[in-house]
Structure formats: structure tokens, C-alpha cells
Length: 117
Image (tube, rainbow, N blue to C red; front, side):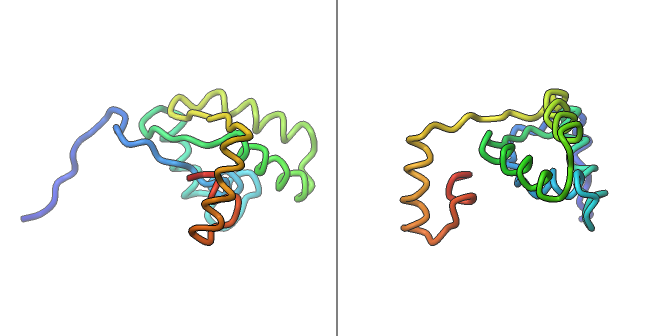
């Protein structure tokens, strides 16, 4: 039997945690920029529900700055996040940051990945 497409036009029920690199591929015109643009267009249109933390947004900005992007580029990126219908940006507390260090210890994660968990 051949698998058939679901024909789904609406949003998925699963929330995808987006990695900072998905945005950075696009912002820095890297090797996988086109695939990332395609994914992000689905998030922008609300077809895919996704999440990112404010820590990861800040990390993206720092990397952009390290790659020579100026305040205009950074402001444009940050403002663009408001247009993503399928994106939720979660604010993380100091307690969450402290708990991330336990995940680092217990699972050998770096802070970035432990914080995302």
C-alpha cells in the first residue's frame, strides 16, 4: 500500500522546539538557508506550531553581532519574530537556568541544550 498524504491544511498539534541554528542559517545565508526558510515560512503562517526561549533569541542576536550584523539587522530580525503566527517565545527564569545546570551534570548536556529541555 502506498502511503498517502494527509491533505492537512491546518496547523499541526505538536509543538516543535526550534533550534537557534534554524534562524541563523537564514540570517547568515548559510548552507541550509533555503530549507530553513521553508520551515520558517510554515511557522510564520501558523501551519507549524513552534517554540523558542528568550535565551535562544538572545543567543541568535549575539551570533549575528559576531558575524558583523548591525543594529538594523538585529532590530529587523527581532521585529520579524512578531509575525510568526506559529511561534511562542518563552521567557526563562533564573530558577530555570539553575535547573539547567543539573541537566548539564546528569546528562552531559551543554548549557544551551540543557536550558532548552
